[in-house]
Structures are given as structure tokens and as C-alpha cells.
Image (cartoon, rainbow, N blue to C red; front, side, top):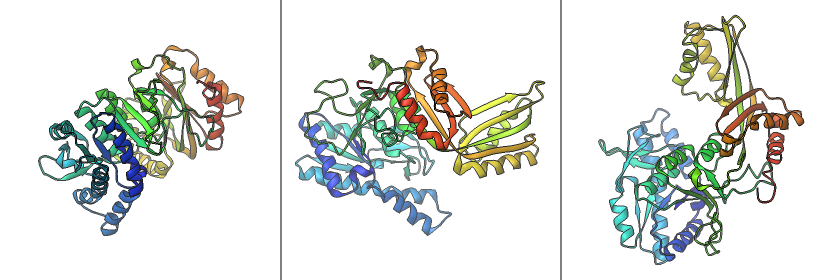
Length: 420
């Protein structure tokens, strides 16, 4: 059971989370708990580090920011103890959770679950700090980067061979689209790992991409549910049985009997479009363009290339986050000045929005992209770029039409209908 920052923001919220833990313990389950820092605490700690020195040692940065989870883990263990549940806190290094030495963005290399299994067998509930581990060679504490607590929870669930990993947050599941954009959005009972990966990468903020990747690799079933649900309410699961839990089950595609053609519509705003005009068309040109951006850690998303009639030049269009637009232009101008890339000029604009439809059912249904384009055309929405994969189609449109597009597609694919 993993509880995020909003779920443990105060001692009273920690008590609410602990009631969920007690329900599972009372039902006879062995439970491990993973906690994030209290909401806002990590940002406060990061601010203190930056205030101390802009050019700080990354190892000391990790030592400071990892302390937020330590506080929460201790408080959760105290509250559980008060409820009569034997519990103790574990920091990442005490489990131990081994990582590489990429401080600030470390990756888990190994978890040795012996102590956790021993405690659970004895009836204890281990409460583990998320977001952190240790480098075995140096003994230094590391942090896993953004969304690290979700990743910690999935990795621990895999290590102890858990039946499932419940991710508790401030929403009660994964929805067909953002309910703030379309109030008719519906909670999905089940969603496939691949669909969740696409949704997470395309703008859905419910789960972090790394945690879903790990869950898919290790076949760890995830349940997204709300800490603020009544912990004593009847537990009716995604399959309709009384043995499950409310929320959205993220699982292998084989577990989903009825696959919808489209399961969700996502929106990512603040997308900038850049076009390199009349690029000299020769082997290695794309590698030179995108290699220069990669060297500056600029994430490129949608890519389209158009070759001229005689094949001598090409236009390359791609998207980057709005915040990286100016930096990207400077990097590409420097690459041209250094002779690495030949092109006539750069054009581009900020303020685009990427709207995507996602569904494993798209694999076996022709015409999903065409119907998406028709639905947008009917609303007078112009498409600037298109990219597709086996289970998703994404379009770049003007930001002013973003929410209209989401609502139109949500209705078009029948996601707002009862039982959808």
C-alpha cells in the first residue's frame, strides 16, 4: 500500500491512511506500506538546498531531500502502533533498496526483501520510505527522482511477490479523460499496462511512467484508489466481487475480457512546434539534429519529416515542451554554425496542445484515426501534426481548441455513455 504526499499531508491524514492499512490487516492480509513525504515538504527541502548553494553536491542534496519520507514513515508507524498494529519504519538503506549512483535520479538495481518478509510473517507492518535507496559501493543515500515513491512501491511489491500494489492518492481511479475538462468522464474499472503507459506519457498525471513500466515488466497488478474513501465501506472491486477494492485495476491485457476500442482521451498542453526548413537530405541528418537536442537533455515528442520532390532537401517538424522552445532554437542554431546540420531557417511557435486517443482495442479496428480526424473537422479544429502507434493516435492542435477537442472526442467514442 503506497500513500502519496496529499494522503499524508497532516497527522490526521496519516491516521486516515492508517485506517486503510488496518482494514487490510484485519482482513488477514500481510501488508507493507510505502510513504511519500508530506505534501510540499520535498519542495521545501529542495528550496533550502538551492538557497544554500546553486552548485551543490548531488550526494548531499539526496541526504537532505530524503529526510522528508523518513518523517512520514516514523509518524505512520507511530499511528499504526497506537491502533494496536505492530509496525516499524524502514529507510531505504535499511531494507535494503540498492540503486545505481545517479544521485537525484537513481534507478533501483536490487531489493533484498528478507527482512520485510520476516517482519510480515511475524505480523508486523513495515513502513518504508519511498523515493530513496542506497549505493552499496559507497553507502550513500540516493533519491529516485520525480515519482520515485510510486517506483519504490512497485519494486517492493515485485520483490515480496505481493498479490497487488495499491497506490493511494487524491483521486479514486483512472478516468476516461480529465473530469475537470469533461464532467461526464467515467472511472475505468480496468486498464491495461500499455494503455496506462500511453496515458501517463500523454498527460494523465495519475501514475508516473517509470512505475507503470516496472509494474508491466514484473507483472505487478496495480490498483489506483483514493485515501479519502471511507476505509470501512464495503469493498467492491473492479471485477464486481466483494473480495476486491474500489478504484481502477491496472493489469495485463489478458485480464481484460471486453476491450474498448478507445479507453481514454488525454491532453498535454504547452507543446511547442519547431520546423527546420530545407534541411540537406543525407544520411545522418536526423541523428545530428536530435542528437544535439538529446545532448542538452531536451525531450522531443512528435516528429514528422517531409522530403522535397527531387529528394535533395527535407523539412523536419517536431515538438518540445514550451519551456524548452528557446533553448532548442539556440541549440539548433549552434549546430548549424558548427557545421553539424545544414538547413535554410527555423520556424516555430509555442502554445500547442497534444490531444490523444488511447485504447488496446485500436489494434484490431481499422479507421480509428480517420474517425478521430472527422470528429475534429466537424468542430472546425485544424490539425497541425499527427503521430500514431499501435494503441494511440495523437494530434497537435492550437491550445485554444484543446478542451473542445477533448470533449468532442470523449463524446464521439461514447465514453460518456452509461456503462462505457
